[in-house]
Structures are given as C-alpha cells and as structure tokens.
Length: 260
Image 1: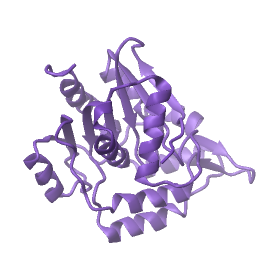
Image 2: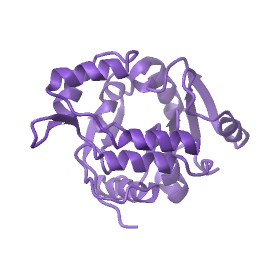
Image 3: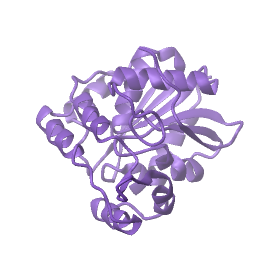
C-alpha cells in the first residue's frame, strides 16, 4: 500500500535520539507537546497527524495498513532510518502494526493504554457516536465542551489546542479538525483480533489503571511474550492526566542500556 507524508510537529533537541509519537482518535500531533517539552528532554520527538485528523490528508482509506504505510512514508520523508515509536490508544494500535510490518525501522516500542482487540459491541457504539461529531457556536463553547468531556485533564495546553485544532466551517460553526468517518473507521480497526508485538522489538506497555481499554487477557499475553508491562494511576488520557509519571516511565525505558 502506498503511503503519504503526514503533517508533522517536531519538538525537542535537534540532535536528540528520534522518537515518532502517534496520537489516538479525536487527537492530533500537538497533544505530545507538553510531554515532549517537559519530560523527554534530549529526544527529538516527531508527532504526525494521522490520516483523517489534524492537518494531514483526510482521504480514505483509514485502515491500519494505510496508517502504517503513511507512517513509513513519513519516516522516510524525515530521513529516519530507525526510531523509537511511541503510540497512545489507537496510535498504539497503529504503532504495533508498524512494528510487525517493518520491525527493522524500530529501536524500541512504547504502547500507552493501547486500544487493541476492543469488543465489537463497544467498538460499534463508539463508531456510531463518532459520526455525530459536535459543532460549536464559538471557541468558548468548544472549550466548555472539552472541559466537560475530560474533567480530569488539566487545562494547560488547551489554548494551543483551540488555536491549532479548532476550525471554523463555511456554515460559521466551529469543529475539531478531524473527519468523523475516519474516527468511525478507527473504532472498527480497534476491534480486529489482537496481535502481539514482534519478539525482536523491545516493548513497554503502560496501562492506565482507571481505564478499561486494555483487556486483561491481552495484557497477560503480552507479559507472557516478554513485553515489559506497568501501569499509571490514571484514566485513559494518561499522557495528559499524568504526564510526569508517564514521561518518567517512557524516558526510563528509552534510556535503558543495551541497544544502539
């Protein structure tokens, strides 16, 4: 499958070890700004917008295979022969499939509360809900809706998100910058049968303790396969809710000796 260069935001040390950070649904690359700036000093964090979201192409298909092809093309465009891969939620599912497709492109893999092997009924409900994407009278209304939906997420960084991820349509209404059908498709992809990381790629799985996204059977299978697994006392949005704890775990794993 042919991939396409994605829109990328880059944070951190220009000479630092490269990390590709992949966001989840309803997200965009800017969500990694705080974690990269405050907790991953010394790394060069490249944060693309997945197809269908942010400033990348919104054209279908929105399959895992297409997302993987886009990430490979983006790594090529950035001149990254090999990098650490950091994925959150659906972005972790995409990252896992990239690791299985092209393990030679990865040094290490981090899966943050990965949305892998979701139940079909839950995925169908979430997919249907995604098609009814909200619109807002003005940015203030969008800000209030954000706070209501994610009450445990700090408001730091929200000004940047409003400026970068909210867009006014031809009808005068404001909407988050994503294609609803791409989000609906992502939930169907999350319901695929779960697969494990390849044995040759050192992998860390960080579960959010107050989230039910990671299936216990999948977590056990990962551990049995040699995946390092731990958890953070957080809801699903752990990189926003608990950035210090999450960043410390990621940094410790990426900094561990033994790999070039």
